[in-house]
Length: 144
Image (tube, rainbow, N blue to C red):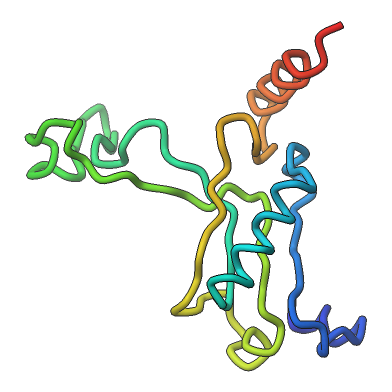
């Protein structure tokens, strides 16, 4: 789909393409500029906006038919302070090196890097709860 779009608008010769997701209204130009500087500096093929999980996925529990199943039983016995940090694609933006992306024709590249968003710099707006959180963030930013 992205390949088709690049070809349709005839921008195959551009070095990079930015995909900025409309469902993430907190994205700002400063972060896009800093992310672009990072992908250039590291010579990566893809950069993805990410956030750090507030709670480690190692604590994940599955619930089925009123029964709990601990997904990482062995790791769960460790002190939570020793858990590795985990991150997720926050649905904010992606920067692609055009030429390599068109050759691969898929999203994944071995040399993918990230841009880490701080708290309240990114919010993937999908639910009513997300909208409520977004309103709180805007109120705190733009207090009269």
